[in-house]
Amino acid sequence: MSCPKCQGGSYLADEDLVKVVETTTPMKVLIKQTFVCRSCADRFSRIVSDDMEARKKDLESMASGVQTVPLGNTTTPDQAASGIQFLDNV
Image (tube, rainbow, N blue to C red; front, side, top):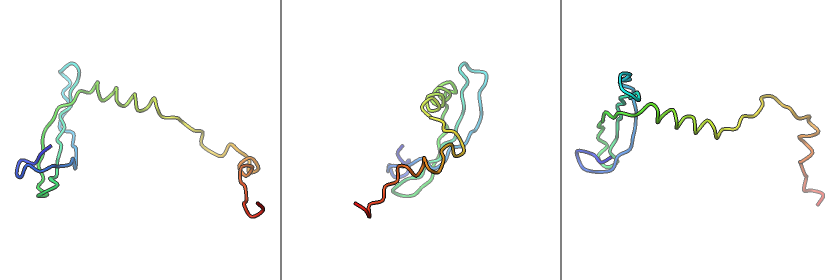
């Protein structure tokens, strides 16, 4: 996104939910994105709409790649220490 004041590059500083539009198929969300210019440090914002179905698919694909690990220590201290090798005797 380029700055409307100096045409410099900008970065996304903040996103705020404005409204969820439930009457459309698929549902849409209106998001206010606030940008900061890298050159003149001017702040400006844009309102964008996003598809809820696309966001759900993104979240599902991220969640499918996550591996879960059991909480707590399931190994004994001897099992955990079996892989430790001291180099002073080498």
